[in-house]
Image 1 (tube, rainbow, N blue to C red):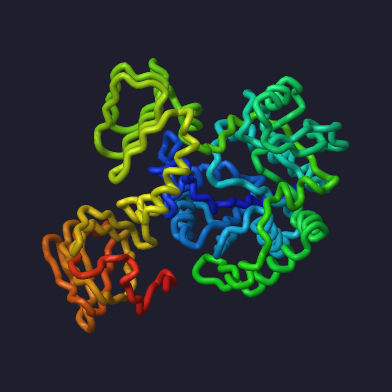
Image 2 (cartoon, helix red, strand yellow):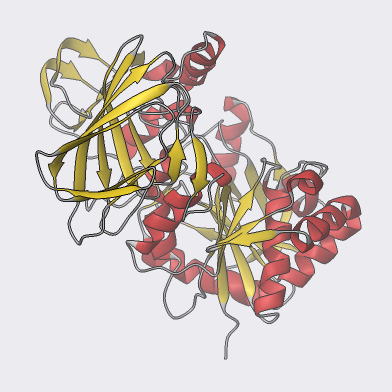
Length: 475
């Protein structure tokens, strides 16, 4: 029987070049950016790495995204073998080391397949065929990469130079060297040569061999990862790496830490219809274009508009007499950029941070493990929110020092705790939560609960929450 492939899905990115749609607390991997059926990039990644050849995935993510990961996998009936929470990012080499240690514990004969959560692959069948070839090479002792056949002299990717054919796996070559991002002239030479492939950072290897190679070149990293995992805590379905220990871990990518040093690196050349969706022009390139070469999403009207990517998440967007632009409108921000300058969106995000604003961090709609809330209006001493609780969900038992709240049920039925009092509210009924009152909102029913919340007080920040009890393990 062939070794199982354990997908290791890395979900730690922030996707700042896709602002304003991608935000720190809801980055691009959790968005349906390239799917006709509404699936997110994370869901698409997990689904194509599933089936007979694959074991349950291990997901490594930021602690702030843990409930998004769990919920998006649950809705696709995918049960992860583990969701590992990184207290801080340390690049891909330590993440892969933690995953390798877990795979060794669960199935020492398996191979691990490192995948980014936010890439697009148009040809999933080709992906699965390539995965089987990479598995054969990994079982034979090779640390194997999938190399994307280039169709343009791309300067934004690193390259893999292939060497002689693999001794035992057809359609697989040994890697001669890894190449940094080239200038345009060098990239043209690579394309003409035919033996260079884009490095998409998709790697497959046995966990034991990866740890052996990493230990040879960076024993400190292996030691710190072992300690952080040994001291890890767990709650619900999450593994929490020890924060103090993991903070001492060296930061490095798999490419630099292992792949560029090993003598056993192989590559499977593939055409996957691959995109890393690194910036808005990538979505224009892979999108369905109209007769004027535009890619349009949402409520958009165009006149004399060509070669542009235009997206509305709500309000009508109308364009007239523009070419080669990126226009993205959410309910709290609008981006207008020349396609050739779209990489500079990251600088806009940095500017927003520097000015102390919060549009880089959250949308007006914020997702929580119990559901979501949307800010409707915000003033200096008041805030109006729409709050939706999923069936049988509950917020934490909590108290606020600086604000009072008035709740009106507009859909469903609510159960409300106010100090020692517990009451049930139907549609059009309301309650008042004075400052300092211990309270909780529950949805004990099978239908969605929707309320309007009016906050008033001297401070309305989300950090004015004292939690006494929380079913989701939040502090």
